[in-house]
Image 1: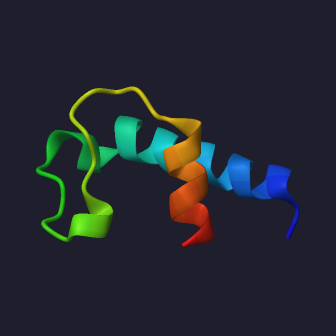
Image 2: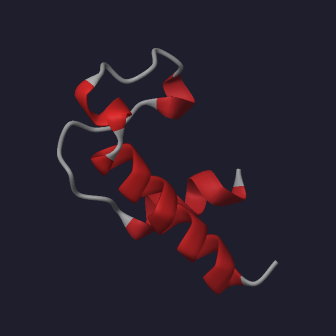
Image 3: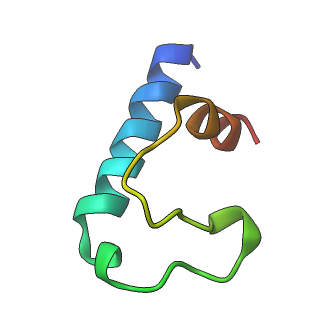
Length: 52
């Protein structure tokens, strides 16, 4: 998979998390799924999650 495809998926996932119905709910308790309350996405964090 191309790296730009991974980044595009990460941006899409972040957009869904921030704009979708889950944005008004509490983040899941799973440590790998914790979303910061600030709507600022670190590209390195997105890449780390995508490569995990």
